[in-house]
Image 1 (cartoon, rainbow, N blue to C red):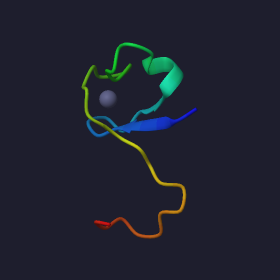
Image 2: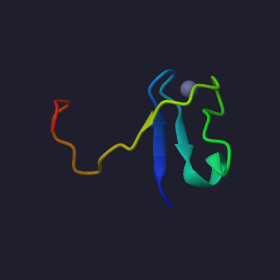
Image 3: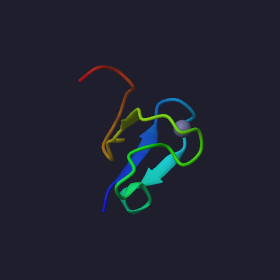
Length: 45
Ligand SMILES: [Zn+2]
């Protein structure tokens, strides 16, 4: 199971919640990113 984060409002969304509708459950945006578990700094990879 994956957890995504909405770029727009910052809501954390589980892949289960997304299901077929790949939109944010809070704001309705469709921009997500997948937070990395080992992220040290918030910079480009
Ligand atoms: Zn959102």
